[in-house]
Image 1 (tube, rainbow, N blue to C red):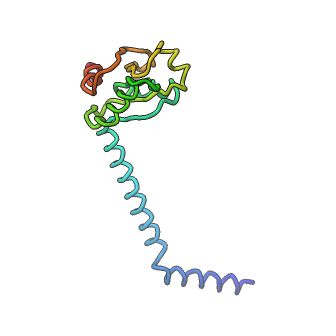
Image 2 (cartoon, rainbow, N blue to C red):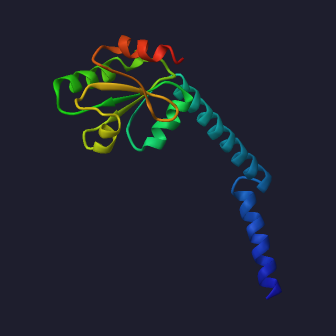
Image 3 (cartoon, rainbow, N blue to C red):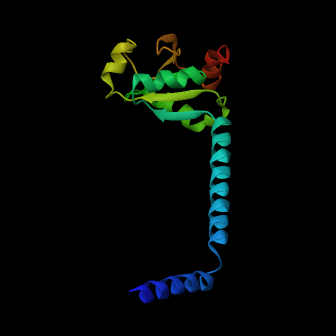
Length: 154
């Protein structure tokens, strides 16, 4: 039994040598990989902070969380022409929106959110504060209008 264990240990050690080196080299490769992954994550975070964010509405708490970090605007969408024009404007001119701004689209199916903010038609924009309360409301306009309504908060 001891001979079998001894032979296994020797074989495992030889296998390590043939596989590309010592266990130190293996751990160094793992360290390099981890450092590269961390650097990529930091790059991604920097890119995200250099761009406005656009997402679909999930919860009031999440919307308020984004409002704590910068201007956050809810865009209420339905099937109306105003709604489609507002969505197209956001999609087509998104690069013009300042990086601190988060635009959260609220679909018609999120009735409780429509009711909370007393919205009756699509294409309505509401800037919310860090408590999730409506700070400002408007309908229509382009990206310039959105920037004007969020500029005072930045």
